[in-house]
Image 1: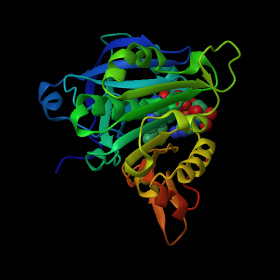
Image 2: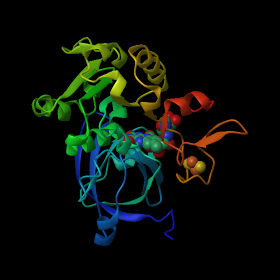
Image 3: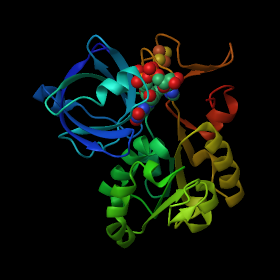
Length: 283
Ligand SMILES: Cc1cc2nc3c(=O)[nH]c(=O)nc-3n(C[C@H](O)[C@H](O)[C@H](O)COP(=O)(O)OP(=O)(O)OC[C@H]3O[C@@H](n4cnc5c(N)ncnc54)[C@H](O)[C@@H]3O)c2cc1C
Ligand code: FES
């Protein structure tokens, strides 16, 4: 059996600036035999390590349908991520994983899909979106609502804008909105305020959400009111993690008799997991 901590060498191929604090990194495995067999589900994450500095859990933001490479969108917030932002094409990093459960995308087949992301929350959901676009015939209508406080914090706005024409022809609606930007010419307000603009049918729709915990609470409330099925509402959560594989206990939430590991049982949880597990939805 393969050691779950196995770390593989990956080469950085390209870096794209997305916002002042977010960059998109394109990697490929150095060993061809790893590249050939390595795959993942949308919503899974990897542990990226820099020798001598440490490692960080990061969601995979490309689609598993693209096999030659994978992408990570990384926000500079501290020690390790600041160093990652200094990497150049050709540099080598360590990658272990993929870890976590990922979204049950196979269960979404035949359904409409509503993707709701705030800020860098679009990173794991971009993987779901690109997967659905690459398997377009398997899904009904699709709406993406991407929100941020300011226009220049809409991490994937440019990419989504560039896809707008083809998206519309494919029954995919893209909604960009900001909450505090006086300069922003487009829609204003929180994601939950734009549910009246979607092209999906609540009774036959899977919903995936990623953003701050406050956003989940307001989205749950609005989605229930609109008639979305709570069994088909999924969120992906973040926690301080160490091992990423259910061994160290750093990411546990719940009670002494019933608990969940965010790294192993998640990071994707459904609505009922959230309401039945105290502490799961915390900052
Ligand atoms: C499953 C999972 C998926 C993630 N996916 C992404 C992703 O796709 N892109 C991305 O940029 N980041 C992602 N993160 C968050 C990322 O792991 C942290 O930002 C990173 O570990 C910070 O490391 P650092 O050494 O740079 O910062 P540190 O020096 O350790 O901390 C700097 C600041 O960031 C805060 N912080 C550190 N870790 C976390 C965390 N896990 N959650 C919230 N705040 C944290 C600290 O409280 C502190 O304020 C993910 C986290 C998890 C658990
Ligand atoms: S990060 Fe170690 S148990 Fe989850």
